[in-house]
Length: 324
Image (cartoon, rainbow, N blue to C red; front, side, top):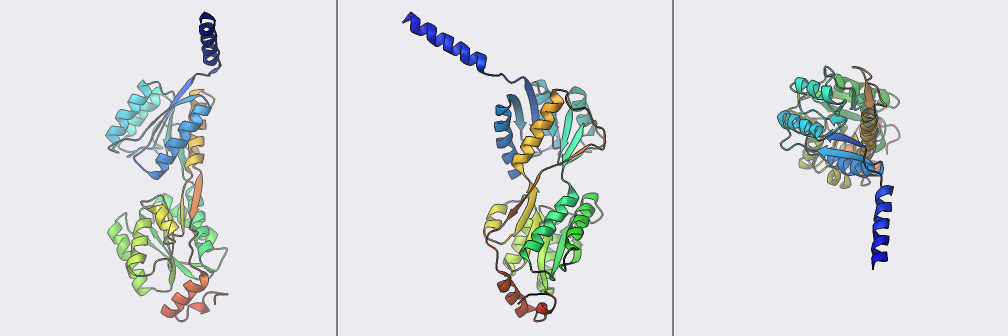
């Protein structure tokens, strides 16, 4: 019996000696509940365990600047050696962010705070977002038709970059961007813009949402006006019920961050900063967040779309080269 006990103790010691304890502790603080952050949380925990890094991942509830500030301090007090935060309100949180940056390397994610002492910003390459939106349109529509785009603020830098990327990709084809409609973030204005186009511009074959909130509004408008699946919808995401809308073919493509790749990028960046392998690169430091495009497999055929459009706009085949 004593021999057996010694063997068990010896085995336990070997296992304990072989296990590599986490020598680094890093933190990720989201800006609220979303499909993206749920995916990142699951993936980064798995990757951190494999790399023997302790990860403290928090999603604030409620998703306010005040609650974020409280959680960030808790995470640093808990031993986080580097922190990534997606600030709810960067301007309002400027002092708090600078305070955090004095305690540990700080990474801004998806929403930048360039005036803060953050080390680097991980965000969308807005021009590439625009290109991907255009590719989604071109993949779902025959060439030569017209599409309409919707933006929050046409003068905002991110909107301008997305529009530029979209036009750049579209310029390689005969598909036409008819106009860009602005709504200042007001969903009712966005709805009115879309409904007016559906009712009075039947030759518009595609809607493009440059903000995630456009996706559910576009989907509801085309469903209520009987144009679901006929008017191609391509949008930035994620958004509520997005996957169901894509599965049903109401939404044709959604451009958003890739949660799995984002988790790897966050972990690599934070671990490098915690180990002091990465130097603070300055105010203009930027890392493009990995993107993915979710596409429907339930696409209405080009022939059926053209048939429906010819009923409403008899001359449509004349402006769509190669269309039936």
